[in-house]
Image 1 (cartoon, one colour):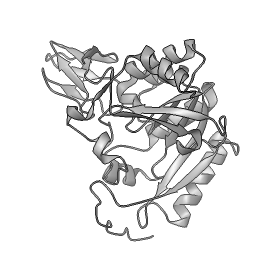
Image 2 (cartoon, helix red, strand yellow; image 1 turned 30 degrees about the vertical axis):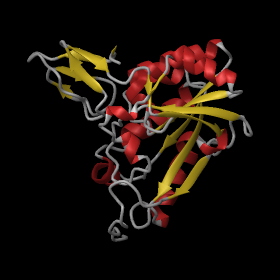
Image 3 (tube, helix red, strand yellow; image 1 turned 90 degrees about the horizontal axis):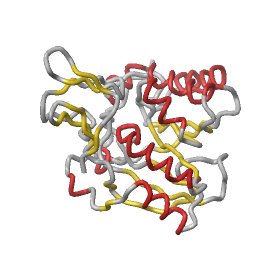
Length: 269
């Protein structure tokens, strides 16, 4: 269902600009943003996936992956549809880039999700599958409902979000795993249609200015972001700018989404 969206402003020509993420989508009436779930309706921003989920699952918290935040506990995972990145190698392509609202079969209020987590013995709720920053209003309301029942909140995100909404979003998250996809802006630009620096800024913000526990994951794609020099630069940045105690996960790529066949290899420097 539609829900009033936040973090937007009206432009002089009558369009509205979304201020949620660095894409800064400028929308005409009826038009949706790049994430597909934020839409201009009657001159205002609407979140079209509030209260609608692509599915629920009870997982071990290590699956997020979080290895140093209540290890051995269980977590209720859920997401919606859409994403504000356009990664050609997306591992959840059918959900994150779906424009089929029929995928959103499960309806659940923030209170219902919190109660389900408690009923099934989950210690936390994970906002995952697609990127929760694009349904920040729904995620924040759910996180607040969870906190009332003593349920913790975990964001699994690429971290592509502007500072102002980030302050509200991460204020209600107890832990986050941020997907740092590579350590070159060219990778982000060509393969994700995004930029690296805003994500580095958010990583530093989470670690230094919030109480949210932080872990980082990088998916290693052969020939694209896996040179020894790039991995060394990434790890060095994490150790220097965040500290040696921030866990850094490296995960394996598998063929999916647009890359149903193996992608062309990047020429190593």
